[in-house]
Length: 489
Image (cartoon, rainbow, N blue to C red; front, side):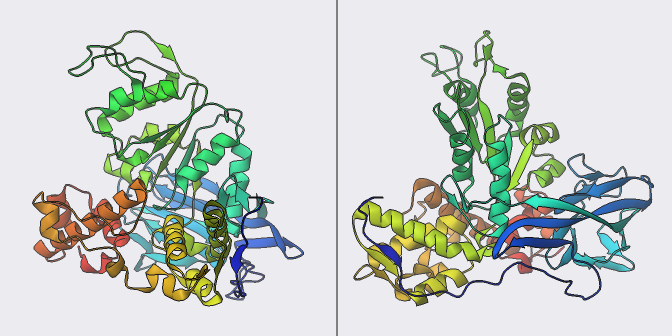
C-alpha cells in the first residue's frame, strides 16, 4: 500500500535446509524424488517413475504406473490400484515418494500390511520389495523413466503465499486449472487456507466478475440444507412463505464453493450428484427445471476416501468432486514459508492501522520453530494478537501467545458443560466466527473422546460402537487431538 508505514523484522533468520536430495541417503538406490535447480532457484521436481505389480492373488498380473508422488491401493474404486481381493480393505495402503525414499504406509486396514513376516505401519521400500495385503502380493518396481513435476515461478497464488517446494508445486497446478471450468476438490487440515485457494481459483478464472458464493455445509441445519442449496417455492413446506432462490442459483455465471463438503448429509448427496452431473435443478416444491452455469469448487479437512469406505460419503460423488484434487500441506511441513507469511500479515496490519510494525529476531525464530497445529489461520491470529499487545510496534517473543501452554490459551471446556446442555465457554481470543467455532468444536471433541475412552478403558472397538463411529474415524479423531496413545484395539 502506497504510503504505508515500514514493516519488517530487525534481524536475520537462518534459512531452513533446502529440499535437495542430491544422492541417496542409503548410498545405494537412486532417489525417488529430486529437485532441479537453476542457480539457487528450484524449477522442477523429478519423480522416478515406478510400477506396482500384483505378483500373486485374485488380480495377479495387474499393474499400475506410479507417476505421482502419492498413490493408493485397496478394494474401492477410489484407489489408483483397485483390487478384487475381499480380504483387502477399501483403502488399504498408500505409497509415497519422498526426498528420503519411497514410503509404504498402511491406512489402518483390517488385516494389515505385511513385508515378509512383519506387519508394518510404515516402511521404506527398496527396488523389488514385495508386500502383502489381504491375500494379494504387490511388488514395487522402480524404472529409469523420469516424470517432471513443474513448480510455479511465483511464490504466491492470488492471496495465498508460499515459496516452499510443496506450495509452488500446488500453485503450478492451480495456475493451470484456474482459467478452466474444472471441478476442484481442495483438501487439507483446518486452517491451511482452503477457502483462500478457492477464491484464488475464482479470481483467476473468466468468472472473476461474477458471484463467488460460499456454502458452509457444516453450518446449515439438516432440514434446511436442500432448500438452502437448491431453493424452494412458496408453500413447499411449513415456513416457506415466499419463493427462494437457492445458493446454486445465486452463483449463476460465477462460482459456488462447497466448504466442509465432508459434513454434507448422506441423504442429500444423491441430489447434489444429480445437479453436478446434469447441471440443472428443481427448487423444493417446484416442477420447473433451471439450467445452471456455475463452476463448483469443494473443500474438506476430512479424508473422503475413508468416508467412502465407511459408507458415509458416496463414491460417485467423490469422483465427481475430485476431477482435480489439490491437497494443501500443513504449515509444519513448510516452515520456510513462515517468515513470508508473517511479513504479509504484519504488512497488512500496518496498512490498516497506520502503525509501523516490526518483528524481533527471537520472535521470528520462535514463530519458525512452532508446530502450528492450527496452521496459517493460527499464525495469523497469533501475529495479530502480538501486534496489538507489543510495545513500540516491535513484536518480541514475549508477545507471542503460543509461548505459553496451549491449554492455558484456549480455556478448557469441562466435560459436564459439554454433555448436560449448559453454556459452553468461548475462546478468550478475538477470532473470526469460523476460527472461534473450530476452537470450541476441537475442545468439545477432545473432552468427549477422553471421557469416551475412559469409560471403555481405552478400547477402540467398544468406544466406536458407543459413539456411532467407525474405528477408522475414531482413530483419526484420536490422532488429531493427540490422544492416539490412549486407545487400544
